[in-house]
Length: 284
Image 1 (cartoon, rainbow, N blue to C red):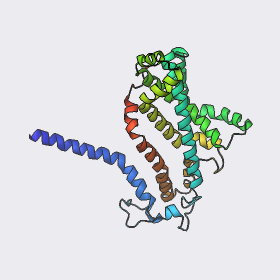
Image 2 (image 1 turned 30 degrees about the vertical axis):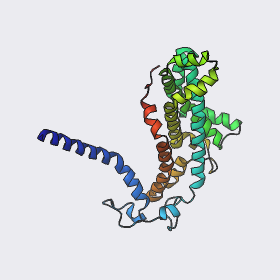
Image 3 (image 1 turned 90 degrees about the vertical axis):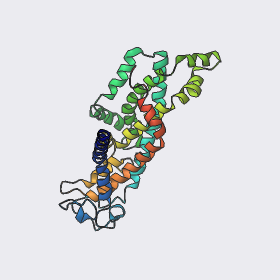
Image 4 (image 1 turned 135 degrees about the vertical axis):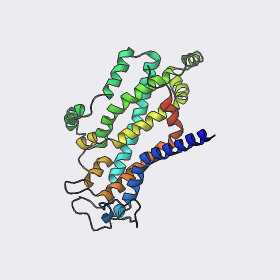
């Protein structure tokens, strides 16, 4: 009995340590977003703020020396750009990846080499392709547009999603397809009305991961965009970091705003996400 109590106590201690390790950065981000500027650099750090302020969000402060901005009052265009780019990247990635994965899984299109080549693209460092793409997009007049970022994000989200969905489709018995063909269904009808509903968890998981990857991407957006009409939130966050100081309050406020859409999107897809991520792993 005593041994069970000790083991249970140790488990709770371990759980509290793990929760503290992962949740403390979130707590620190949230509290910093509402701290006064004099608390940003105080030592010892202010763990529990004595008073809270909305100045980091609304811009009512006098400003912060050394930073380009003292609030997030101009964040809306960047938030809109990130939402549009991430949603379209997720949508196009899901459509293209599901079609490609179904073709490879069922009809062995391109053989094993095609599947291996697809996943090898994901391993390429983005910087190795961005500079040639920059010249191409400049000639096509796509620089500083949403489509430039969306197309480049698709280059890196589609291979990973396709690779995972291949294993997902392989987990669905082929006899279901054959039964549909016998009943007169075409390949596309079988895919749309039979396979897609059965693979909804995997597709939802890939759509969520594509959204998150596109949402947090920085390097491609930095190189291909140059104005608020197409720049994304990760670019916006950089304005609070200067060679003089870091405006921790507005930076935390902007980080908090950046987190919210991802959290909402992930919770919306939560019931599919866990099953989709654990089904089939990455075997081919």
